Length: 151
Image 1 (tube, rainbow, N blue to C red):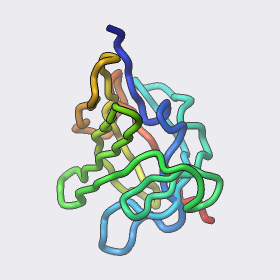
Image 2: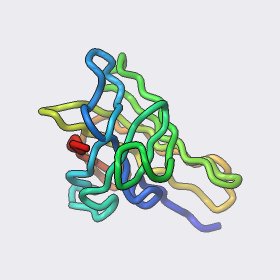
Image 3: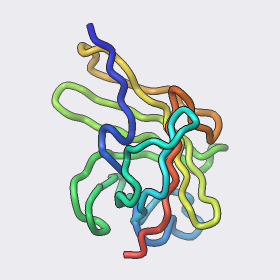
Image 4: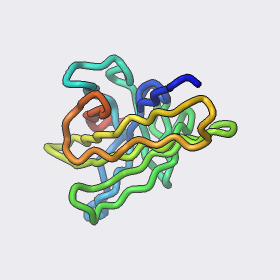
């Protein structure tokens, strides 16, 4: 059995929304965003690439050149009532389901998401990562910072 690690960047090569970060008072990520930075294990990480556009809308995350266009790479659920706020990104393909558990916040007009990396063997049908408890990258956590896309 081989051990595979699934990361937000490797799976989608970038995610997040465009336009205004979240609707007033809703607290759930929405709109179009571009990747400002990605970090893993305390170091800059190349995936997703800086400038990659993610759109959060209707429980789906789409990666594409313009807001709302491109490929749906995840479905998501967010809970803005938790502290820190929680987000689960789910990707299904074939017989495998990958669940990236994370936390998020908005700070100075940016969306910051920290997700636990998922790993498992080639036989696993559901692969999940642990939810981080702090906004800090590590060997099992990736920290992503997004800026509004403006388009």
